Image 1 (cartoon, rainbow, N blue to C red):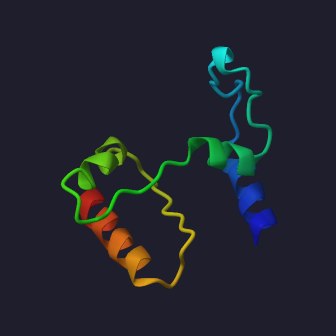
Image 2 (cartoon, helix red, strand yellow):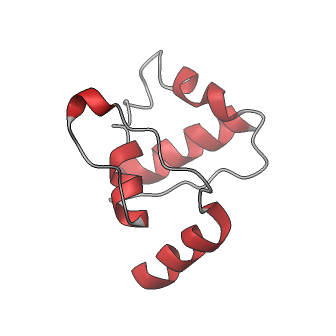
Length: 89
């Protein structure tokens, strides 16, 4: 599954330019889809937090939003996914 997801990212989201990574950090630019996702990932606030919905406003004009998860099947995941979906709609 991860190979299929990686191939999808490479096909549809491949960059034509190098990723933006601050040179002052001394870190190398991500070279794989997994590294790119890990670099860009952000911790999710609690859905009951007043700032939760505002974290997703930057995606309001996007045609496609992919909601990934690491806790599939938990009530926390489904509660957060429902709150994100409501905010984006």
